[in-house]
Length: 231
Image 1 (cartoon, rainbow, N blue to C red):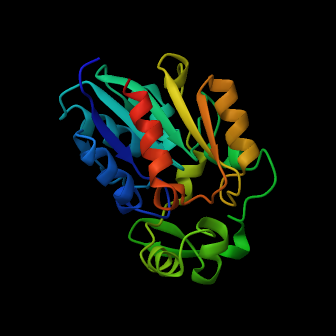
Image 2 (cartoon, helix red, strand yellow):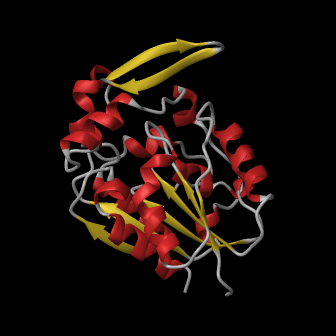
């Protein structure tokens, strides 16, 4: 295909800045890159938001998702015909009728447990943060100390409703080529859950000994995987 635009979609607890090191590498390789911000209020509004955003871009497009954003890009209503391939980076690969919360509990090992979370009210609902003292272990154990502190301080909270969202229809990864980066030391989405989802999807898998914050810690590998998807 002709040169695509890379669309990098963040997940829960971090914003689009989680892609900053990957973005620079892709731009240095000569590709246009854009990283939208999801509302993180519920799955339906997130996939509607992403769909509308993608309609503003000229194709072809490669869409990469981190963490919860994998659930969003799995939903057929989130994408446009301009999307040619998908990259799931330590991300959910959700099927119709499933939920992100159910997938995260399918295998043991996640530290996104009630005792590690803080719930704060916002106008119209509640949103979830990781406790700052639990953030490094649960999300970014192999990041450097400054990154751990910055991530913990600038979390992008999510409404718990996002974890209960489902969709109908054929998931996108059944009809589009896909790649998956699996982090073997992930304490947010267990590595075995990532492997199970990626194998089910038939994704080309790259494993890395890293935490959930792999776009920040291993940007070369993540960028390389995204570049493969463009070829």
